[in-house]
Image 1 (tube, one colour):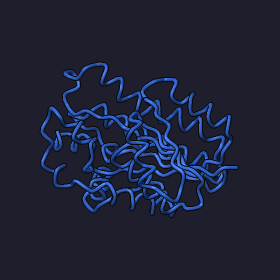
Image 2 (tube, one colour; image 1 turned 60 degrees about the vertical axis):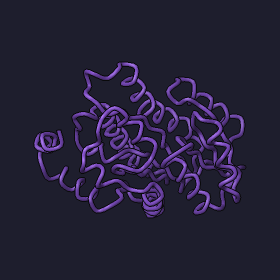
Image 3 (cartoon, one colour; image 1 turned 30 degrees about the vertical axis):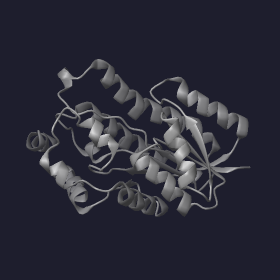
Image 4 (cartoon, helix red, strand yellow; image 1 turned 90 degrees about the horizontal axis):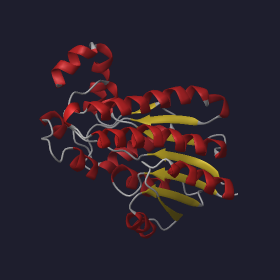
Length: 252
C-alpha cells in the first residue's frame, strides 16, 4: 500500500515549500500528490524533488467537483495518506462593498469549502500518527477591516482545525493550524495589487522557506498552532489580551 502526502496550493509560495521540505523530512513516503491549477508549475516540482515521486493533480479548487476527483483517485488506489497539507488560499484586499461579488465567493470557496471537502475526502485514508496541516493566517486572530472576508475565512480554518484536533485525537491523527503573518509570495502580490500594503505588514514580511521550516517542526512536535516570528507571536498574545473592538480600530 502506497504511503503518500497530499499538498494543495503546491504550485507556488508556501505550498511549493511544503512540497520541497516534506520530501526532505518524510523520506519514507512513496509519492507526494501535488494539487493546484497551474499544471506546468506542478510538473516543475518533479525536477526539484528527486527522492520521492511527485504526482501532479491539476485542479481548480474553486470548482465543486475538485474534491470529488480527489475522492475518486483515493477510492481507486487506496493509499495511506500520512500527511495532508491544505495550503490553497485566495485573498484580495479592499473595502468589502467595493469588491466584486465573484471574488468574495471565490475566497469562501477556496479558503473554506475546498479545504473542508478535501479534508473530509482524505480522512478515511489517514492512519494513526498521520498529520493534517491547515494553513490559516495571523489574520484569523482578529477581524481585519480592508481584508474582511479573507480574515473571516482564515478564522474559520483556525477554528475548524482546533475542533478537528480534538475530534481526531482518539484516532491518533494530529491537526496543526499554521498561522503566518505576511509572507513574501505571489499571494501578497495578488492580494494587494490595487491597494497599498500597510507599513506594519511590510515590516513583518517573512520568507516562505522559514515559515514552512517552523511549521513542519511544530507539526512534528504535535502543536495545535504554528506561528512564525516574534512579531506575529506578539500579535497573537495581544489579540488574546485586548478587546477585539480596540484592535480593529487600531489596524483599521
